[in-house]
Image (cartoon, rainbow, N blue to C red; front, side):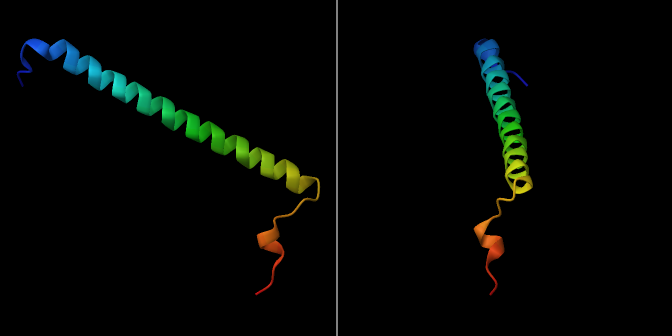
Amino acid sequence: MDLGPHANFILLAYAAAAFVLSLLVIWVVADHRAQVRAIDALESKGVSRRSGARAR
């Protein structure tokens, strides 16, 4: 595969995009875990979700 005279720029752009995407994935996973911990802490204090209290 010949990328021509701009091969370095193209490869660097792909590497930067992959790096940014991996940072976003890590951020989302970390935030999800933090939200789950926060919900667990609230539920351990007796706070319940309103959607769980309704009977249909």
